[in-house]
Image (cartoon, rainbow, N blue to C red; front, side, top):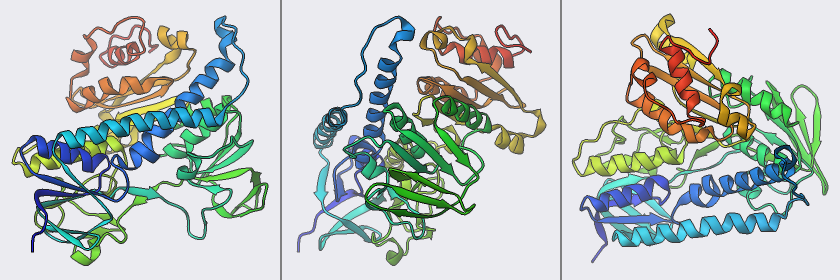
Length: 457
């Protein structure tokens, strides 16, 4: 009996799976990619791309609403949500078509269907067994909820929020992490009244405390309410509203509830447990080479414990393809992966938080915070915020944390500072164009190098 086979079989066509497929093909390996939905996965179809399209539409709405402050007369008549979705979907469609062409151009065979891992060297798809000398597990993630909290009606996850055909008058966002803050920002720009509920003591709790404080103040100025240190107790809904009860006894009412408590690994029903893959709370356990406990079986992306970021999965896919091809790539430093929350204002960071830096390097750590009020381009853009930089005992940059509109565009330079281990004195000698927001990084470097210009001592 003939069965399909390849050097590499990949289970999942999201960021991690398709990047592994392309890179493996470039390195001369035959590849079969199994995907149950559409190539590009959550990031392209239900995550990064459509949400950032919504955020850009929100930015345009804010610009139109506030045009008078720039001396520009513009009328703002509200949000045409069908037009917003048409714009968003057109962006996704163009990228999807491009990805399909890219995969085909590299000779990657795509098998449509829900695959399951049946053991080292074998994946099963709709009753057909596909053999691969190497197998890469890349099944991605899905929206999480809380025990007893059912999704439906006026209780939404980000999946339903992306296609909502109206702008709610008011909304409660359960979860103050990246997803919750981004949707809160979009809906507020579209005119909704927003309340964010976060069980931990601050918003974006995985970021440096400085960033949480800056973001909370900025959202407050936008009249977005955030309640931290509060715990969800239950929700009821009728035809017109949701009623969210907290453990404190308080009840909040809004038109919709967005459940944004994170994403969980999509590993149930994929055959991992049954085949003997070592798991950790539904995540696939790997070593620093992304190898599982089974021979020639790797895992990448959101099913591997750590940051759930598309670009992390993308880089892991490249890494594993090169590992399989014998290129011996350098292990990925998780701390060196850029992190961005695309709210208004944005939060961008790389490296260690101050707390983590002091825990690892002791009190020889020093920090500087540069207020964007002193940055010419930021004043032109009328954005508030700051850049915080952390220096280690050897003079290296240990972390960069930024809050402000468009700071996501600075995180590329920030990651080079961290990942290359550049001494701050050397980096401070580099010239930043004027006027740019990048000068904020230059000012922070100058201050850490002992020669501050626009930073008060």
